[in-house]
Length: 176
Image (cartoon, rainbow, N blue to C red):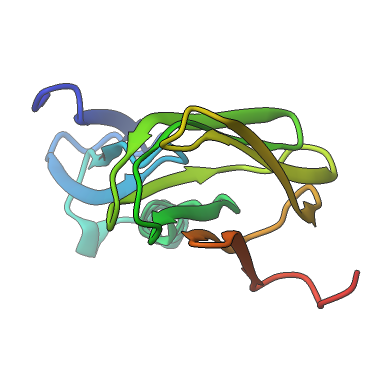
């Protein structure tokens, strides 16, 4: 099922072997996840036995339980949720945040506006933000160092005196 490119479904059929009684029963396990870009997708696993579960062997029931746990357990990928906020009196334009191995940005940020972006850190290195102010002057400011696998929030708030950085990580001790 596709809703504007934001929702896809995957179906996997698992047939438990060595059961030959011609009665059919099926169980469906459904789980929804978001990938690292925030796109919602759905995983549906259909387990089909050739006999009702109450008559299935212990091995078949164990396989069914394992498939359910793996499906419902989901996946997790470490990411940093970045927010760039403009609390200055003038509009900002051509905002770019460089981080290890990549960058992202936005064309413009009006006063009072926020820009949100999530990214995965690959490699280690410093962060840098580049922007153009309302007087069309280019600026550059260095931020904290990120390491591969970091997860948490990064905030850059533009005020009257320039950007202020905030970094809160949930998987790395401060200073490491």
